[in-house]
Image 1 (cartoon, helix red, strand yellow):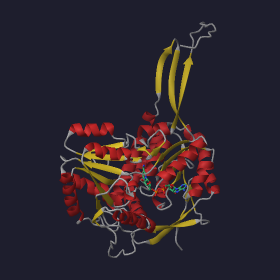
Image 2 (cartoon, rainbow, N blue to C red):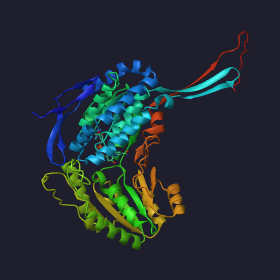
Image 3 (cartoon, rainbow, N blue to C red):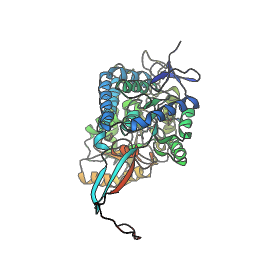
Length: 497
Ligand code: NAD
């Protein structure tokens, strides 16, 4: 019988076979395991456990919370191979890519270990005569995180370590496509000493998400996933008074200026466009070349470099990238290549019909390069989320920037140039949340915050880092007076100043 990945509620793995879904090994194209899909009752059980754990956890000193997180970091490092293997098996990413994902997750745990410092608040002595004033960052209560398939370990760790050290109890609803790694993370955190109920994992689909959104005990929701779902979650969560941050999809452009170091740019673009099969919200999926000379050189060098890319299974680290997540997604990605071709773009390197020997049923798409893409094409407007790099040709940097500023998404972007003035103009005026200058994947480090603009983020606060602390706490400002003995002030009807 196939094993079922269950939930993690009140410190126990809860096996549940009432409603399940297949989880695939995308390289083999076969069912790897099954995942339980939580009912409303199961989600309510998890919320009740978190609610019960909250009073004691919120009063646990931040230093003690941080020590548990520090032990968790050590356990993550000790279990690196196992976690990377789970990621490779259910996502398909190559082990070196999985190790990078895990490391970025660990860095968020390291940031959370600074809880005593992060939660210090602010203090003003003598704000008035004998009056002191201070601000505290108080915990919120039960908070939830809903995460996508493409970073099954890192994105949950953008959320729960920080939320938990801020004194909250957390409900994680990971992607149903690769549930094993997030479940294992919860078990490790318990092993690190986390009291039961502080972190609960409910696996599931829309039913579980709806139960989270409808429950009044859940005070805040962090979401990462596609834009239509992000918008839906944000609208529904905020309508019922929950705090919400909902990070959505992307279409990340790189501008290649005529003065760019083209060999360097091509090397950078290879990894940024095709790494993780292009299934990264920061993947560079469009290159805008300024001038035909730059475009021709780019196409020539890129075409040559793409010949040596290796596509295959996760545990062969000679491979550069693996399959896409599902059969349906493979068809969708190839459908966009078909549509670009039908719209008159030029398929320079064609990744359709790639067969990987020994993995003939796997969901592979080869690296694809498309030239002469135009703004009105569907393949340009949409987030393809596959190993497809589209090239657009423009005559000036202003035209390139206009394209980016007009696009509905504003997650990441980058410019390749040797001209500091151009780079500064670009970063000042581009309507995108995360900007690289000769850096193709400008994913902020854990002590900054991650968030796009436009329809790549709904809400006011970005994920993790300083914005994460703000998101997972409520500010309370206290003003106190201890009058000197014997001093009595008369009534005053003027506004206190
Ligand atoms: P998705 O939107 O399909 O799913 C994300 C989560 O929402 C999952 O947990 C899923 O179970 C849940 N969900 C799906 N449909 C739902 C519905 N109708 N109602 C309620 N919940 C629902 O996204 P995905 O395919 O798992 O992930 C890929 C997407 O995530 C891409 O668009 C990518 O750009 C985006 N992403 C964005 C960021 C970012 O930081 N901006 C990071 C990673 C991924």
